Amino acid sequence: MRLHLIGMPGAGKTTLGRALATAYEVPFRDLDQEIVRREQRSIPDIFSQDGEEYFREREAAVLRDLIAELPSLVLSTGGGTPCFHQNLDVLLESGLTLYLAVPVSELVRRLQRQAASRPLLAALPDAAALETRLTETLAARQRFYDRAPLRCAAPTCSVEAVRQLVERYNAAV
Image (cartoon, rainbow, N blue to C red; front, top):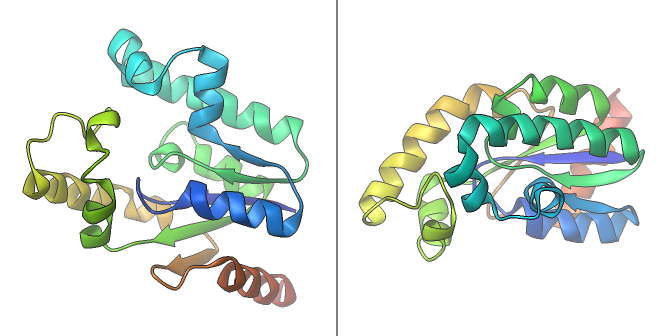
């Protein structure tokens, strides 16, 4: 079993991913955490020292490494992962991909306190600017997210809900 979680920052990919990995008894990896571990520096440091393009290249390389290394896995990706370097095709071809759909208003609520630690949100002055940025970002990414064969919408996206989605999907293919 290989399950990839995609969606916006703050969608709950890491939290749900950990729980799913435990439920399915497979390894869990957070792609951003794996990049930090391999780079030996934080994502804000990577962005400030080398820029977003370097980060996206490393992200693509680490994604491919993890897929090659782990035949069974629950993987939490970064919000932009599916949108660069044909990463979505890699995800779709190597496992089952689940889009965690969360309304922008909920993302704002979840991210307000931690926006400063996220490079693409750090410079925003207030909640209104955060909401505008998230709305624009989601609009740009939606076409990638919508290609996932599975979709789970907040607030009903739980381990049990995902298990049912996976079972229905597997029964249909």
